[in-house]
Image (cartoon, rainbow over all chains, first blue to last red; front, top):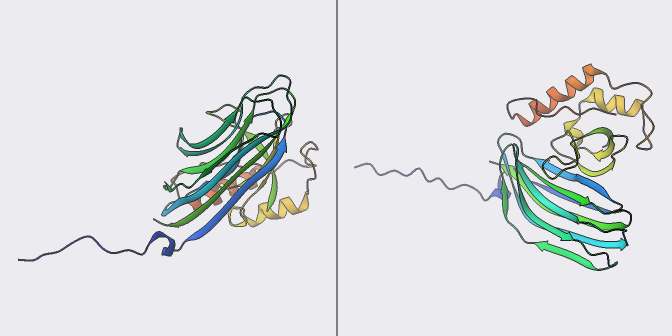
Length: 140
Length: 97
């Protein structure tokens, strides 16, 4: 009787032709529509793992009136988007920190995009945004 | 490398303002003029486009380019990205603007 197995040991992802991608968006800006600030798309034969991310919003100057403002981390596949993490606020109080550390392990597949976007629907005022991520891309 | 590009999208949750590239960072936009600065990996930019960007430097998000971005370069850039990412079709059509 022949016994065989198709389970073949492979190196861990960080040893498969890996590249570390470090992205940070950091700015104090006024009201704006939903806007992507950085993004990483995986080509054929490549995957990625997001190993950690940091999202932060702090209102710097008051709006009149205030509306929703946020920063979000999203994964997009075709026309479908999943929000991996977000920080939202409707507060008009200045210098209040809304932050979120995301010790995540999100796998991104070929053709998918992982991106950070910001939004401020207020009138006037400014907000400090930080959206940072540590990603390792590797052979699928 | 930093390139000034045209914005796409409508600014909604499902269609955010963005640049038409697979990989980018440091996006600064002007929704009124439809222009954005972005940091783009050099490996995603063909040499001819690099030469065009060097020949016509931009310093703000308002002043138009002295000459329009040639369609031949736009086509070459789209084909370069299609080869680079090998995802079946030319998904991206960036335009220096």
